[in-house]
Length: 404
Image (cartoon, rainbow, N blue to C red; front, side, top):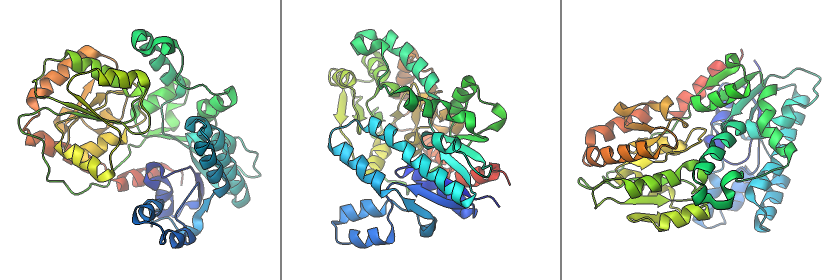
């Protein structure tokens, strides 16, 4: 039976890929940045409860601890750069190669195969081995060429909003860093994508459809919260980074023009990033409340008391937040450039508009402002939709597609 080396930073996808490999006895080693190793847990007991919980969150009981390796030096360097004011995106782009190289060295040593996310694959896939490892890629974000094309066209359409940034990419990197993400698929023997849209982006780049598999993410269905939205009020919510590709400007411009009940209120919960142009637009739009981040518990409560979750993204590899909303019985509105076509349709509380089409968004908001308040049937259907996508389904499907 083949063994795979897996590597990435953070708690990506709730550790479901290395967990799937561990459950099928196919995990050689999982390489990550910071993980709650036994000695880390011992130290954490002396920290405040909130810190202890945060540290212990970096673990997964189903992954054998002796199969986990942490790149503590890379982790320390990353934190130093963050504290020193360096761009987080630049830091991640520069340090991702450390995980790829560590995976390559481990695979060379143990004669293992590789199962790597797209940000951590380039150096490992191109490494010179004494054996011939299988190279399995998880493409978690759409191909950057398609993303750049979509976002550039939209910036030109809204040049008055984005000003001098209208024709420029939001983030520039040296060519060798751009190549890592852009071309790593060319060295893969098998490619997993979390959405059909992501697969489409790879096919447009030249990937062979025969080696591409779509496996949507999952969710562990949380207990249903008793909180319910007001019966006669339309109160949609947007949750995510306030950045261009999320389509927040389309939502705000549609909200300004939509003929919806005057008691309606749009809530924006923005996490790490908020583009200045979008923040200014949000603050100048009536019946909009802006909140800068909430806890996980507050997030679930927000879904439970909101009429609709809306995020009309221009580019989205999957959009886990859609499943999080559906799991609390909150219908969702987005575009086809996300995971939504893979999850369901209007019978499941999943509503679609064309990417970037404000007129469609206006029409949909106007219709849903009357159809959703007090509609318990659609909320039940939304939760049932999420129920069909447990994480166990994701793990089982991944392993089923892996070569025997």
